[in-house]
Each structure stands twice: as structure tokens, then as C-alpha cells.
Image 1: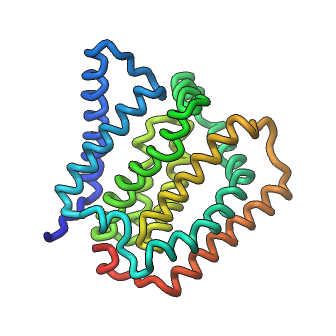
Image 2: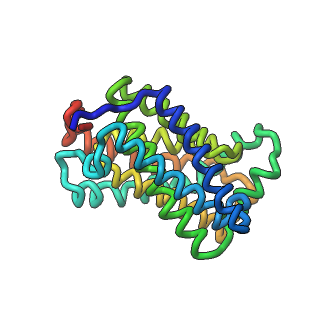
Length: 263
């Protein structure tokens, strides 16, 4: 089947359609007398069901199948995971220090929004469904949609840098939370670069799962009160850079950045 990758305007329309799906699903659930809320368990179900609908529609529109979504590299899935997992752990664990300070500074200039804070609080509540939603189900569905389908399509239409930036803007926009949007954009750029480099969704899912899991654990076990020392931020930033450079070196030497890898 001939592929029909979507462009930015079509992807923006798909993102708006996602909000429409969420509204319809939420209203349907509400009609059964079930409260949806914001950031809670039912709210997450609404998002997951709606995202599943959109993924199904986009796969039908573009002709992209699951095999192409998850892995189109000449490298095996196993080797890709084995090589990237320890380096991703290094990058994100180190970033727990320097990146948290960077986002704190950025969010400082965001006007206070109590509704957004409440949503974040509900998302990070200490129960098993919240953990599964934030750390596993959400990352998998978001990676299928934003990297496996949208970014993959953009790589047909735009230069890699532009494709990654545009898909990251949509990824940030869909969160609709002032406190998440800056972090979502930077995370989207990194994971988009990772997808372009490895031609596989598996490292992207791993990166997203690790990022969200560390954020979840940090909220309860390492609550942040003060900024880290400059030396600590420099050292941990250097470790993250080492991880990024190693991934770049390993996959630049073994991956072919040709159009056939995307199809």
C-alpha cells in the first residue's frame, strides 16, 4: 500500500480532532453518571481511548502499519534496545539534577495557574493506576502518535530539524498545561532526534518511560526545595552530554538516513 504521510496542517487538524474525541468520550461517560475530573483515573481513560481512536484513523489515512511504526531500522530491535537503554538511563538520571533546575527557572516566568497545578497533582497521585498511566500507558500511546506517525510523516515533507521541531510543538501543545509544555517541548525534541537517529520507536518509548518514571519518583522521594549547586549541575550536564554523544556516535556509524528507512 502506498504511504500517504500527513503534513503539519493535517497533523494540527488531527491534534484538534483529538481534543474533540476527548470531549465526546468525556460527555458520554458523564451521561452514565460518572465524573471525569481533571488528571484523575477517569480523565486518563478518556485521553487513552481518544488517542487510540486517533492512532487508528491516522494509520488508516497514512497507510503506515505497526511494523513500520515500531521499527524500520536495519539494526535488530534487541541490539537497538541493548545499546540505548543504559545510555538513556545515564542521560535521564543525570538530568534529574540540571534539567530540573532549568525547567524550574523557565516555569518561574509562567503565570500561576491553579487549575494546571491541580491537574499535575491529580496525575501524580500515589496509586497503581496513576503509575501505569503516567509511566507506561501514556508514554507508549504518545510515542506511537507523535513519533511513530506524526514525526515519521513529517520526515517525508520537511528537513529533519524542522520535522523534529514541528512535531515537538504539537507534542507540547497537546498537553495544554503551562507547567508541562516547556518540558514536553524539550523532551519531544530529544526523543524526536532519537527516533530520527535510530529509526526505531523502542528507544523513544524507553526514554519517555524513564523520564516520566523519574519525574513521578522525584515528586515523592526527592522533593525539590532549593537549586542544586553549580558544580553539581555542570557535572550532571556533562554526563548527559556524554550519553547523547555516545548514542550519536554509535548510530551515526551504523544507521542509514535514507528515505527507505522511514517507509
